Length: 175
Ligand SMILES: NC(=O)c1ccc[n+]([C@@H]2O[C@H](COP(=O)([O-])OP(=O)(O)OC[C@H]3O[C@@H](n4cnc5c(N)ncnc54)[C@H](OP(=O)(O)O)[C@@H]3O)[C@@H](O)[C@H]2O)c1
Image 1 (cartoon, rainbow, N blue to C red):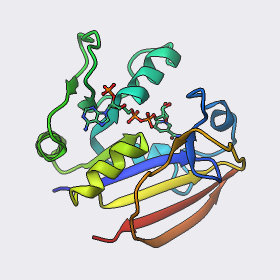
Image 2 (tube, rainbow, N blue to C red; image 1 turned 120 degrees about the vertical axis):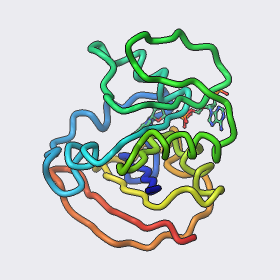
Image 3 (cartoon, rainbow, N blue to C red; image 1 turned 90 degrees about the vertical axis):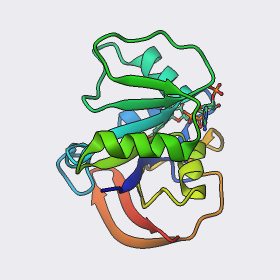
């Protein structure tokens, strides 16, 4: 099986982090992980994840506890990061289709998650390897920051919901 979702949260004006790579504007928002398009329901279906170097660096800088993911993770980067023994984290600069193939093999019958950033999600879409985008919009505008998806892409809206303070939308990627 191969089904890839870019699941993210955004400001109303389309930024997934502010100009200082902060998520403070997001992490304070009320929402229910078991509610519509909530994180707990989403992550239960995920068998492999991929993220860019800045997203990984954000996790290193802000997550005080253990590595938060149980499934194999790919970090696309040209940088040298320290290995994390005991966790299946693969640092790579291989082409996206090769990474996708490895993720599918690792995920079994589960789905793939593009954690971010937006440029990486756009790279997957460019190769026809992105199926769905789920966005939770926080009730704030930021004016600048990391863009949610810096490319042109047709989408088909399939679901909307209010989850706490977040307006959630699910889109199929039109291929
Ligand atoms: N709101 C949310 O839900 C959410 C979700 C995810 C992330 N975020 C935040 O949003 C920000 C995202 O940062 P970002 O937009 O800069 O994106 P990013 O994807 O996290 O990082 C981009 C970097 O990843 C590396 N990279 C990307 N594609 C690559 C490829 N094909 N091969 C090799 N390396 C590749 C490059 O770094 P190098 O070449 O230097 O290695 C690139 O500069 C972060 O602050 C993160 O914490 C928010």
